[in-house]
Amino acid sequence: MRTKRGIRFKASELEAGRTYLWRKEFLPLLYKYLELKPRQIVVDVGSGTGSLTRLLANGIKFQGKVIGIERNRRLLSVAKKLSNKQRIPRKLVSYKVGKAESLPLPSNFADRVVCQMVLWLVKDRKRVVSEMLRVCKPGGLVGAIDLVLENVAYYYPQNQRLTELRKKWHEALVKGYAQIYGSDRNIGYKLPTLFKEQGLERVRLDAYAYVWSDSDDRIPFDFRLKSYQRYVRDFDTKQEKRRRKEEERILYAGGMTRSEIKEFYELGLQNDKRIVENPKLLDQTTSMNGGIFYIATGIKP
Ligand SMILES: C[S@@+](CC[C@H](N)C(=O)[O-])C[C@H]1O[C@@H](n2cnc3c(N)ncnc32)[C@H](O)[C@@H]1O
Image 1 (spheres, rainbow, N blue to C red):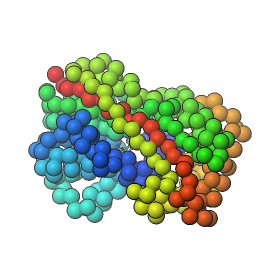
Image 2: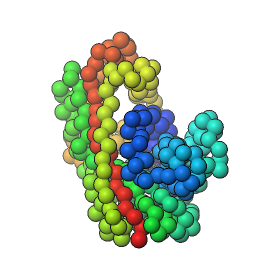
Image 3: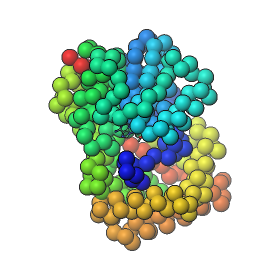
């Protein structure tokens, strides 16, 4: 949804979407690519509800400092609450209101300046990377994690049409967001180009493949069911209708027809209702989604 200040994120969905993104077994890779070490100062730009911020604190073994910068006060207050709930000391993890385009931090301040799923949505990507560079110490590392939305796969084995429409939905989101917001939802593998242009050295690109499978028994049943329940419960709320209206505008601009969009929402709702009405189906379904998170890093000369 677009407000005067841009796209709106729902804290509960943002947080739920991140809970099983960086699975425990893959976290050492994240820490390795970002070259995290105890006693570093780390900045997380566009920290949202703080899911990455808290992981970064873990990555420096809770010795040092992690600062999340977020322009949205509502998300920032959720991030603070979650930090308190996990009893993370404020001197270790703190948050500041601020824009990625003009970070409220001094130059040459941090050892690591990173962002996750932020560069796809900002219009002036070069300015944000140059701000990240400004705040980073010489010899420090700038890192960005992002997707190539077009390559994200969704599979609904019981519904071929929904699988096809989901693919169209992704393609239309990429085109529509570019047209309406000037954002690049396929930025993932373009990050090294952006980094080099801004003067970063030793630019590297790594990747992390994530999959979400609806019947994965390593994820608590209730957590898996909740995302279906949330979607069905909220479908007719004013807020959700407004969100869909804005999404429809983007999808239409991106090339989906009105009837395809309508069909996509209807089939999606039917699919989710089927599970909500009979939760036992959740452990039998083999529907999934998955994609690649690209992780670009570079050193400030
Ligand atoms: C997709 S969310 C990702 C949040 C978090 N990094 C994560 O991975 O969970 C994008 C976040 O960037 C924030 N954001 C977007 N544009 C921003 C800007 N120009 N300055 C600061 N934050 C921004 C949004 O408010 C939102 O919290």
